[in-house]
Image (cartoon, rainbow, N blue to C red; front, side, top):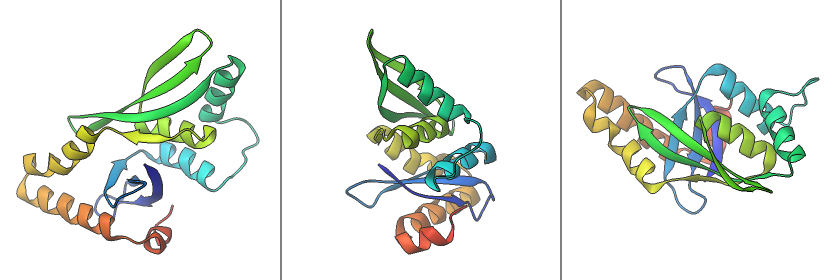
Length: 160
């Protein structure tokens, strides 16, 4: 998947990372905190900070240990919380490290690592609305359709 935008949810006013299939139209919105969104926005906009941010530090540590981030995978959706895994190559062998998706995405942006989402997560995210109240389901459904129909130009309008 690619990051198609970082925007503010018009319903909750919380930041959303919008992932879209590389070859396809499905999108996956992941709600994140303000600090996490800021770390991603800084990298998207190529802003250099005077001192290393946490994700810059982690990249530096991986590099100094002769490792590399091979990919990140958004691997689970449990109780409306997304989970991710960092897949790191190290001289001692492959490592899988539990991560919040926002941290994994921020690190992937800094290293150029690809972003993957398990098919089950995409399907689960689409069915979450069936377990909510009818008002919440209507809002989630409306938001999902709205996100899927945004053009690249539209996403640019809503960047943080």
